[in-house]
Image (cartoon, rainbow, N blue to C red; front, side):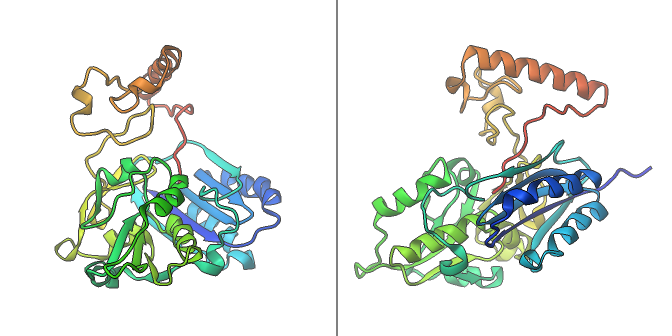
Length: 313
C-alpha cells in the first residue's frame, strides 16, 4: 500500500481586506472540513499562509480563496512529502501579514521591480548592484547567494534600522541599485517598498523568492550556496526543492548548527547551544514533558497535537 502524499502550498497576497476579521471563521471552517492543516494569517493588508493536506483538499482551499475577486489572481508554490508537515490548522488575525512595524509602507503601491529567476544571476553579477539578504541571521547561516550582504538581523522588523545605519552607497557616493531576496518573496515586497520610500529609485527583488529560484535554476547554473531554511518540517531545501540535511531544535524552532547535537547544551526537544541560555529551568521542564509526550505518541503511531505550529515567511 503506497504512502499518502501530502501537498504543501505557500501563498501570500498584499491586498486591502477591510473585512479581514469576518473572514476568519468561515475560512477556518472550510479548511477543517477538508482536513487541511497549517497557518493562515489575515490582516488589513492581505493574506499570508502555508497549508498542507491531500492535494485535492489543498486545491479546494485555494479555489475557495480565489472565488473572491480580491484574491482571484492568488499565486501559490507547492511541494510534496510523505510526512504531514503540520498537525493543526490556525487562522490568525494580525496587524501585518509580515511584521515590519513601519506605518504607511504599501507594497501594492511602492514595491520594487520583480526579477524572474532566469534573469536573477545577471542582475546580482553586476558589480554596481548591492545584493541584500533580507532574512534572519539563522536563515542566512545555512545558505545565501554568493556575494550577498548579510544584515545580521534577528527579525524582519530590525531591517529598517539596519538600512538606515548601513547607508548603502555606490562607488560614486549615490544610492546604488539594490537587489533584495527572501524565502518566498513576501518580505521583499515590504523591504523594497521601504527602500523606495527612502529614496532608492532602482530597487529589485527576486520574483517567487529563493524557493522559485531553486525550483527553476539548474545547480550547474546556480549562484546559490548552501541550503534554504523553510518554515515547516523539512527544515531546509536545496535545488529542486529536495529536503536538506538540517535538523530543527524543537524548542527555539531554529535550524541546528553543525555539531549542535554533540554539545552538552543539546537536549532533544528541550534546548540547543543557541537557545539553552535563554530559557528558564521551568521552561526546560515543560519542554521535557512535551518531548516525553511526543515520544510516547510516536511510539503509538499517533499524532501529538501539542506540536509547535510553524511560522510563515
